Length: 86
Image 1 (cartoon, rainbow, N blue to C red):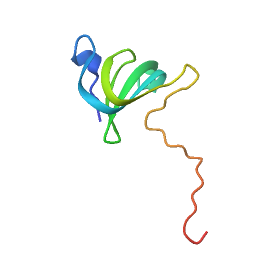
Image 2 (image 1 turned 180 degrees about the horizontal axis):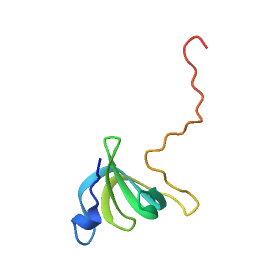
Image 3 (image 1 turned 90 degrees about the vertical axis):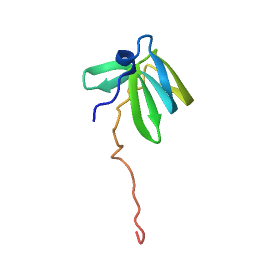
Image 4 (image 1 turned 30 degrees about the horizontal axis):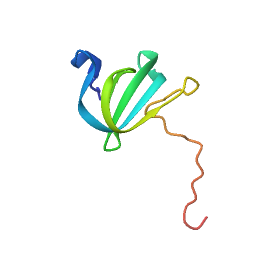
């Protein structure tokens, strides 16, 4: 699935949509390699990926620090699942 990139679609990086959550990550692993991005989430799904400093509206904004690397779509495989009867 190809996600819309706001910076390319709208000069000035102004979001036309409000997101439930905006994640600003100075370090994110993307198909092009590690880069700073902002990620808009709506309805629990990634709806938009844009420039780190793009203007966007969101109900909640999370800003990650330089020591945190965002891996979009990564699921933590180190979970302890207890089935009924365990």
